[in-house]
Length: 292
Image 1 (tube, rainbow, N blue to C red):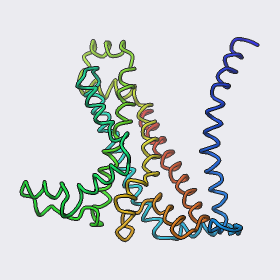
Image 2: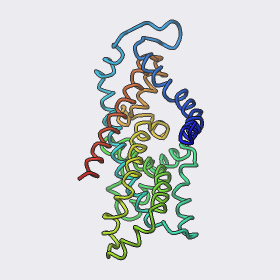
Image 3: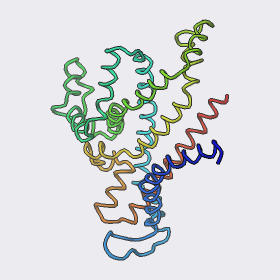
């Protein structure tokens, strides 16, 4: 066997355990869920084949489309909130000083906290009577701006997007800092010699060289936003009157509250399809941007 063959065999043997575990705990459940979407099953007894009835019922349900709309708001807020904030902080905190390390650790801190704790903190911040936000608005003379942030349908989804952004900036900050620190120093020196500094260097040199990293973070952001569940569930339970219902909370309530496992499986399969469609659209858009 040639050296190239041995290297390929070594790489396959290293990747095989990880791929096996990923397939067992990620791919197989998705296929299994899609399969059970074709059955009418309460979780007990023998499943009854229902064909496409569950999928058709989901698509005809107005609550599904409301949950999808709310999820699109969360996806948009996450992409336009988490990634720019993380990138800006990464550019500012790129130096390896104690101050930069301290701020990076502080930004990453919400990721090591329990999501339930984060949700409870923000629930009290938004509380209409004892919340810090309304108190601060009254303190600066903006009492007319106070409102029940989680109960008002006109603002509650945007209010929920804030803690989602706050809690998930950390990982993208670490990714962007690593990407910036791994840029070739020769390119940076050449840009300085050519007079590319400040914004010109950022948009002409740094961002184009980080474009593949940015595309990966967009994929992670979309997938993570469509799986958002625990923070919203603790803060609002999808209410009031389903105005903060997300696809994940709608799937949970439809599956475990009324024991419609086949219907819930159909919803979870559609979540995967929606996620794949949004990721494909974003990558096509970003590929066109990079080629233009």
